[in-house]
Length: 393
Ligand code: GLA
Image (cartoon, rainbow, N blue to C red; front, side, top):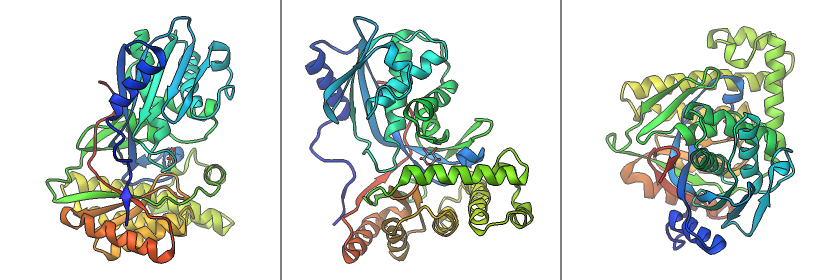
């Protein structure tokens, strides 16, 4: 059988953060800030190609309880790891000095300081319902909740529109993961009941109503629980391949290859692998635009085939899927899902399936059965609705 994505019986995440703060520091936090995980409805590996994405924030959250620190240093405790991590400005100012999960916190301090802001020292306690390593952006959730806490505690003058880039810099330049702007944007700018249509070049945003209830639909998220197989190296390799192709084609980014010119562009590339990579990115941008058009017209169910086509493109052209996610997609479709695709960077992580509300259990069961047949570890499942972005609680 499948199991819940979030562990049961752990108690409320905000209460856990508060209790952790009290226990660790012996005082009350000054406040609590919460940031969600995300799934991407469609638009994979398009963000660093200056293209389009359509993610939404999840009802699973990371909560940071925090208060000003006594001596201009930062102390962070997380329920992931009983040992708190402490660092000062000298470590925050040198990318890589703080590592492990605490690097996401130090990275935010670094990005804020690099932007010339006077970041207050702080004590923080972190609890999270966003599973780590499942491709639901637990790292963007930590970065964004910590960013919100530090901005509030320090009374920093930093409009929310600038937060995604700063959180991304923490991840790119401090942690050292060459990711795009999608995750932080979804986590920071998400609005309940909407998917976030983001132009990753201009950072222009449109909130697209995504009312699953009204359409009698649900999004089922399946955690493939696939072990990570070289995901970081493969991600960086895909990114380099796209950048090289853009240079060969003489464009700033693959976003600048119009769908109508795709065949001509492919003819100018001399290896088959690069052609497949480019075809994925260009057709995926178009699928995002087509999905947005259908959602604007209120045709939610009709986006299913676009989701499934996106999966085929990731599997065959971008080559970032693994047997566990392909199995989940196939089983979901066979069991009646309107569409299904892997979501996130790839090489494991989660699959999402668009299903009729009353079919969600049947589809979840079908995926679990297919996993058992193939000898895969039981998948995690959860039905979700688009939730809101980072907030002070
Ligand atoms: C990861 C990255 C994002 C994006 C996706 C793929 O989630 O963090 O920036 O590139 O992969 O769409």
